Amino acid sequence: MAFKLIDLPYPDTALEPAVSAETLSYHHGKHHKAYIDKTNAAIEGSDHANGSLIEVIAAARGSNQGLFNNAAQSWNHGFYWYSLSPTASNPSNELRSMIDQSFGSVDALIEQLKERGAGHFASGWVWLAEKNGALSIEETHDGDTLADQQGVNPLLVIDLWEHAYYLDHQNARPQYLDAVMDKLNWSFAAENLTRGKTWEYPG
Ligand code: FE
Image (cartoon, rainbow, N blue to C red):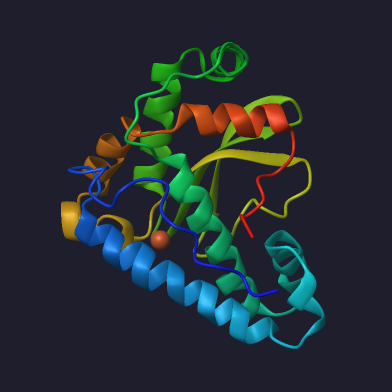
């Protein structure tokens, strides 16, 4: 089964000025598409061809770095599109109480996400995740992902690669992080928490 480049869940202008249509045209139309195309080319005719994207990621981790990078980036970008939304939302009651328990408040969580995102060296991802019944902020480097990691349920992610923000904010990653904090899709985070298992890339 070939994986598809999923559509953005909003018009490409919807996140402006935090993330412009021009950025999305490259980020979704070129970068994400290339990760999907390379994943499909690598699994064509192999045992992986009938697996879910998470199964492909798990099988490739530690054994096929090229496939792992492309498959993990395919999943990470799908998850990132859904982690942002032009529609303002608030954490559900369940999510809010877990945020309060782990971080003190939603504002404190947002400050920590911005700090960890700004401090992350070079390319990668900053995540809000549920781990052993508590919430934590996680970072992964380059194309690495939480998707296949046991005991971790990713709730939200922010792309820290320069291609995510350079056209709009140049080198000012903190400015990009400030801007996207207003676009976090708390409804998606709550769905992920309630499901209790890792989001599947739509097939
Ligand atoms: Fe990206």
